[in-house]
Structure formats: C-alpha cells, structure tokens
Amino acid sequence: MRSVTACALAMVSVAALTPRAPAQAYDLLIAGGAVVDGTGAPGYRADVAVRADRIVRVSRTPLPRDSARRVIDAAGRVVAPGFIDLHAHLDPLLRLPGAESMARQGVTTALGGPDGSAPWPLGPYLDSAATRGLGVNVAFLTGHNTIRRRVLGMADRAPSPPELDRMRAMVARAMAEGAWGLSTGLLYLPGTYASTDEIVALAQVAADSSGIYTSHLRAEGLGLIEGVAEALEIGRRARIPVVLTHHKAIGRAMWGASARTLAMVDSARAAGTDVMLDQYPYTATYTGIGVLVPAWAMAGGDTAFARRLANAALRDSVVRGIVFNILHDRGGGDLGRVQLARVEWDRSLEGQTLADWARRRHLAPTPETGAELVLEALRRGGASAIYHVLADSDVERIMRHPQTMIASDGRLVQPGEGHPHPRWYGTFPRVLGRYVRERNVLTLEAAIHKMTGLPAARMGFADRGCVAEGAFADLVVFDPRAVRDRATFEAPHQYPEGIAYVLVNGVAVVADGEFTDARPGRVLRRGSTR
Image 1 (spheres, helix red, strand yellow):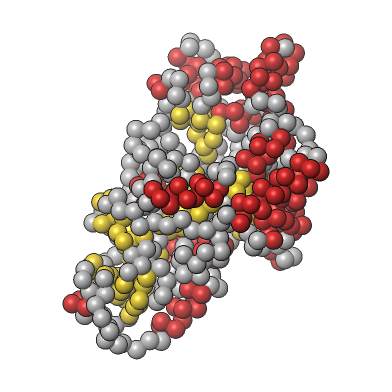
Image 2 (spheres, one colour):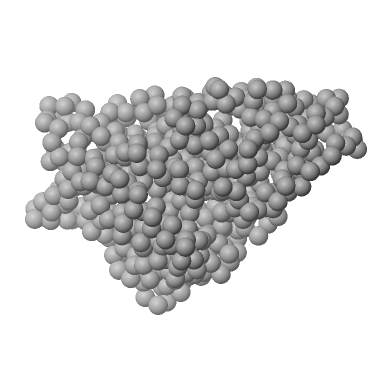
C-alpha cells in the first residue's frame, strides 16, 4: 500500500545512501527514532536532520549529535510525517490561528472548505489568514453551497443558464485564487436542491484546473447507495478525482451497507474513476439539528419555513418527516442517541440528549416529542448535535479499505466552547491508540500512510506527507505505547497524550508535549510550490 509520489521515490534513493559527514551544522537532529515514512513501507531506525524548513538527511547510520544546534532524542518513539487532515472545518481560523486543537493531534496540514461551505471570496480570505501567522499549514476547497446560496439563495429550483454560468465563473475564480477543488454538501441547504447535472457542470470547471471533488453525499443513511452512485457518476462525467468524505452508514437499517459501498468504489476504480474515501474513527456523527427536518420544508429560508409551520396541514407533514428521520435515519430510533452539542440559547442543554430534554419537561421521550423539541430548537436559533448512529463493524471495514484516508471532520476549537464531538481533539491519536495498538485493525505503517502519504497523493503534494530528504520538515514524534485520545463524548475538551513533538516547516508547534504557539504554518494555494 504505497503512494506513488515524489516522496515515495525519494525514499527509495535514501535507503541506498552511504553515510557522509554533514557539510555544515543542522538546525535540528531527531536521533534514534523508528522512522515510519508515510509510504506504507516497514519502519526502520534512522536519524532525521532538518535545516530551515526541509529534511536534509535521513540516515540509517547515526549522525554526530554535535552536528546539530538542537537534538531531539527519539529513542523508543516513532518519527512520522505530519498528519494531513483532508476534512477540517477551519471556520474559526482567523480567531484561532494557532490551531492548537489540530496541532496537538499531530496535524501539520489541514484542508478546509468541506461539505459545500467555504470562504467567499477565497483570495482575500487566504491573504488574511497568511498575515495572521498560522500554527499549521492550511489549504482550502471552494464550496458549492456557498456559491449556490449567493446566486440562488435558498430557492428549490435549477439555475437558469445565466445563473449556472455565474456559478461556473465563481468556481473558476476560486480555483485561480488557489482552491484545491470543489466540495459539496448535498445533504445540506441549499445544496440538496441541486441536480446531479448542476454539480457535474461545476465539477468540470474544477477539473479543468486539476482540482479534486469532495462530496458529503446526498444521503448517508437511507439512500446511501444512491448517494454513493451519484458521487461516482459525478466523478466519471466530470473526469475529476473524487473523495467520498467522512464515509459512513447511518442508522440500524443501513448497518453493514459499507460492504456494498466499498464494492462500488472498487468497481468504479476498476472502470477508471479515481475515487477515494476519508473517515473519522468514531461511531457518532455531528451536524446541525436541522438535519432531522425534511429539506422541502426549509426551501426559501426561515420566513418560508415559519409560514409552513403556521399552516396546520403543512406543520403536520413537517412533524411526520422529523419523526421518520428520528426513527429511521439520523435519529437512530431513540432520542437518547441525539446528544445536544452547541446550544447558545441554553448552555445547560449541552451534552444532554433529546431524551434528557424531554424528561426535563416531564414529557415522554417519544419520537413525536423529539420532533416538537427539534422545532423548538430551530425556533430559538438552532443547535448542533452528536448522533450516535454508526456501527463499529462499518467503521472498521471502511478503515481497512486501501483507499480510505483518516480525516477528522473536526472544527478548530478551544476548551470551554460548547460540547463538541471528541473528534475535534482526538481523531489521529485515537486511530494510533485504539485501532492500531489495542484492536489491531491497522498496522502502524498502514495507519500512518492513511494519515500522510495517501492524502498527500490525493492533493498532489510532492514534498509533504513523507519522511524523505528534500521534503518539508512537517514531522510528528510520538510514543507508540502511550499515544491515545482523551476526549470523550461526556468530556470532549481534552487534548491527547503521547505526542511529544510536532514540527511544521521545521519549527516545533508542540515541544516536549507542550503547545508552543509558534506560527510557522503556511497558506498552501494550488499551483504554488510552497
């Protein structure tokens, strides 16, 4: 399971190098660690020397410690490429530029703008981010939902030819300003109102600039198979590389369906569609409470939604639609599976379930009660929730697939902000601790490949995602016996353990397990070499 990248090819030559004396002092020497280089190849003992922002030596023969200004003793630890998070919600980046919640996980590069939502216009936003100084490298997609909302608002209709031309021009502008591709959130508003043809037309523009397409499918529970088929069709017709993002099978009725969706991926790849997947290692999802409301009810925006609720017949249809989703889809058939996460109008509800809220009101925790509470939450300004609706067997099956990458779907956060999904703090250490060390679902080399070399290949990075001479010095040093996530669904605001050092472009953002708040990260624009 190896990525065919410049980094992988570089590693072949490194293995054959003979020892040589350094021409001049290194800035940093990481000595005596087990290098797991990101290609999927077996680890090996080596010293890694860094000068400025690059790896300049990877030596299986120990290098003189006095050849470097600083030495990190990595004996008993793993030295790996910095983790690349291919699905990150970077919305708070300008407020939290240090990106501590990501850096402490070992993330050195994050791709923002997922699920159809991204900054607009992109170019000025990237300029602002660059001037802030960043803790990690960031890149961005452009978002279909953002573009559609600007052109069509919340209208449930197809764009006119001039409107479609305007949307295509917006994608082209974003790509010219450095976007890495197009993302969709076809479950969300207003993206759900778009046809497949509309997405193909926009994806073709991204493909013309060598971009990628990432898709939050139109359905991940009932309708999952059709959602995967649509994404594969978009990839085939637009001739664009596809990522089925945070791939999962939601709800008891769909548990086990990942066997079929992965077979669909294999079949599409055999037929020539370049499709991959990303995944977070948890059995719960996270999104707004409005996901339980049928999309037709919210067409036209909040005012139109309120008018429908004022009509008794339409309100009854809306309630029945929510009840259906609680029973058969994201609700998991039990109000106890819907855990409120961010409730700005009543923080005492954060961490509580819809069942808890019902009992607080002295109401039976029935789906009908849940529907009324969902409507109340929306009326009071909305809320986000954690939905405990996935099966461990699907998580493990998807994780083992050779084209699956690890990605957090996490949002930048700092302690005390709401009751987030623990993936915001623990995704990458959780894979290394739970799914590598404890469960043996993956080998260490395979897991790191899924966090580094594989997403680097998807992005087309030639010099990130690997430990190789000439690559950027994005590196993680961790203890394979101790690394683990600490964030839980009950107490999510906890940083992981076992990650000693995280280097971004040769500068430590985590040193001796402590966050340094250094800002060596860069804005990575498609087409730029840096």
